Image 1 (cartoon, rainbow, N blue to C red):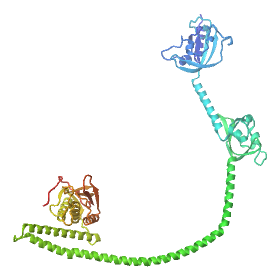
Image 2 (image 1 turned 180 degrees about the vertical axis):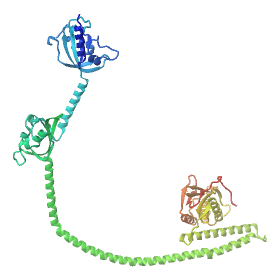
Image 3 (image 1 turned 120 degrees about the vertical axis):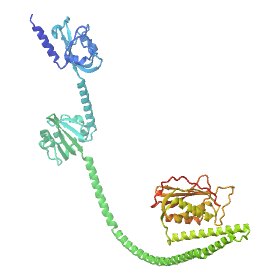
Image 4 (image 1 turned 30 degrees about the vertical axis):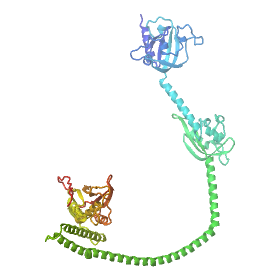
Length: 571
């Protein structure tokens, strides 16, 4: 037997496998009996088979009447069973769906149509299935792009007109039709140049060959023209700014697009502005002429007033100079008088008063010593008390004199490197001399801190600050508390805060004595420091914080120096 038929069937199978679309054969029962390679790739998924499945499982929307074994064959179809391409949704063997286009045709002898697989039916249905997955997406994108382009053209304020290569209108947006006075339907298919570009602004003919549209359609060049004139349906001139550009399909020129902007609103605004500027210039010229004489008169009046004011001011200056000179002489006399009184007071305190007081203190001390033992104990106690009072007054006078000389500049502070604990101890001793023995208790915390200060004057300031918060008056008596007992402890605490030495003094009374306060503030100010007052919650007294710069001192000394608190009643 010749092998030609088998070779022909193999050749036919190879041809069908090479087709770009899926090819499926369905028997009279609606079952897939064979398919080409493209069909297997399109419908099959791993682990499933296409052959043997029902056609309606793969194409649920396919017309079942077209299956050869159907008893309800439609009468309107082609006698050979051919159908036009129909779009529908296909289903793969795993159930996933994709868009396809299906064409079907009947085959009378199925055995000879594709292969010799043993099928014995008389008729098969052949389906050509084209996958439209990419095509549908592209068509949808094209439709969306077209809708977007239409919306942009409708929303554009500029006129847009598209033409073919013969210059006939194929596209016009609403703005173009409105500017030219037409309805959009009236412009389709008409020659654009003959319709709106036929004449120049002066009414002379404008040949088509000289127009920018004709050059764009010939050469493909773009043109921009300012002040071009178009003609409306009513025959009116419409000044526009015009642009022409080519439209290409690949490398082929298929038409042109002309866009234009109506200049009439801008020209109207420009004319209105020019007219307003002209009116403004005429008004300025008229006002200048009207007020020229008034300006001259006002200028002359102003010059006259300035001359009068200048003379008056010169007279006032002369009078003020004489008055200020007299005041200066009086103030000079007052200053000299005050300086004389100040010098007299210093002389009185330093010589006439302090000397006798010092002499009386020595005599009282000698009497109180009672070397012969002839005095009564009460008299001896009174003499000791008087001697201590004179000593306190002498110390107070010395401190006031020192502050006065420092304040007027006749004396300056002498800075030396000193230990802060020694300065605080000297200040406490000085405070005992000012308030008297046994009047106050002390709680002192003064770590060894080296600072560059005037130790004697700083100790004097601390002594007066302690005396101020202790509440002891010039007679050496402390106020009597209405509530009974009052703690008379004065706390003195020193510490270093960065480049500053900080000393806090806290006592039972608010302080502010007119004798103590000026001395303390003057000495602190001479050191470049400050004195601040702080209210202490729950206490009747006040806390003073004295701060002076550390200067060239080394600050806190590295030493195992614990907090030293000395609380002892000084007798």
